[in-house]
Image (tube, rainbow, N blue to C red; front, side, top):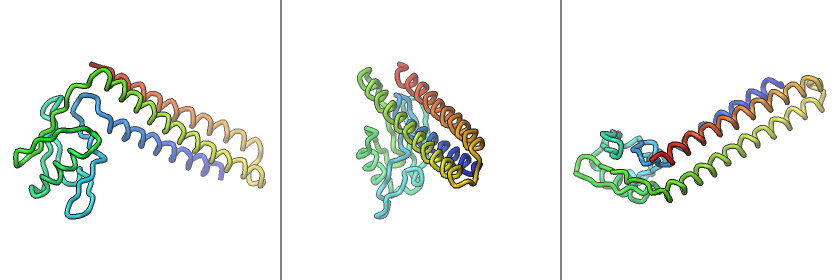
Amino acid sequence: MIEDTLLEAEEKMDKAIEVAKEDFAAIRTGRANPGLYNKVLVDYYGSPTPLQQLASFAIPDARTILITPFDKTALRDIERALSDSEVGANPSNDGNVIRITIPDLTQERRKEYVKIVKTKAEDAKVSIRNIRRKAKEGLDRLVKDGEAGEDDGSRAEKELDGLTKSHVDGIDELLKRKEAELLEV
């Protein structure tokens, strides 16, 4: 039972790190990155569809993204969704592909993005701590109900603390890399 609780906590913490990675990828750094458009939904025949399912991405240079729709009739809908997205893209359409040129980031905008990244990192850490708290409550319940000994409970709690620390450190490392990437001119 203790192993199940620890394994479940570790899996949830791993998922929290994956969510943080996805959130960080959605924040632009001045370089072309298809990850910026992971959360863009296109109104395709009346239903919101993720952009990745409707088009392929190519990056010919550091500041340009080419989006080629699989279905040419969706070109206008994709362009509209990109214009309306929070990414701040100015798409241009040549009839076959959509071209997006990523403008240079100002120093002020970079600092703003760093604040956003720090907020997302803190959210991920809070999520990991909440997972730890729930797992600890589960371990305490096992000890209280007599399903596990107190020594096993304290050993499992130390293991849980180690898991929590390694995952929080992983978030800190992701934050440090993203922050360096954002501030790089």
